[in-house]
Image 1: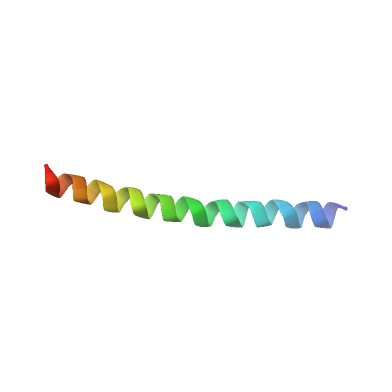
Image 2: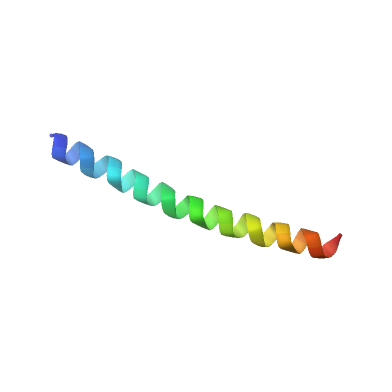
Length: 38
């Protein structure tokens, strides 16, 4: 049971880490475009 729980936690952490990286990239890109537009 502990092994599956650890696997599930690592899977969730892995997915959220990828989503967080994508969000940061999109945010930085948007910020750069907003900086150019102003």
